[in-house]
Image 1 (tube, one colour):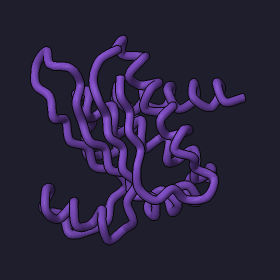
Image 2 (spheres, rainbow, N blue to C red):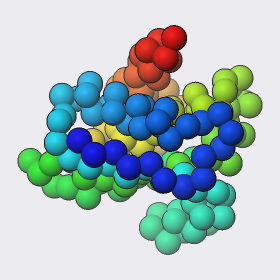
Image 3 (cartoon, helix red, strand yellow):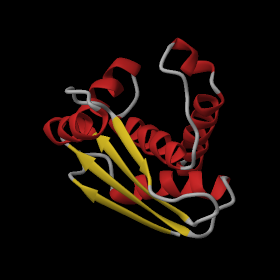
Length: 143
C-alpha cells in the first residue's frame, strides 16, 4: 500500500502521523494493495476544490475522491483543510494533530465507499462510529 502525504503541515502534525492514520484505516479494512494521496490545503485552496468539484463556494475540512471501481485496487485522493481542522480542534477541545488525523481517517473512509447523512444523524452513523474507534486506536497506539 502506498500512502503519499503532501502539502503544508501545521506545527505539531507530522506527515508520518497522518500517514499512520491513513494506514490504520486501510489495515483495518484488510487492504494491502492500492494508493492513497493525502494533501493538506489552506482555506483558499480547499475552497477552490469545493467550488470546482462540489459546487460549494466555501472552505471545508475534507474532500475525497475515490478513483477506483469495483474490485480494482484502492486508489484515491484525500484533501484536508488544515485551517478548518485548526478551528474544529479548538471547538472540540482536541489537538490540531488529533483533528487532522480524524479528517484523514474520515476522508479515507469515504475513498473506501463509506458515507454518512448530512444531518445530525451523521454522528450515529456506521461511518462516524468506525471513524471515532479508529481515531481512538490511533491515539492508543501513539502512547
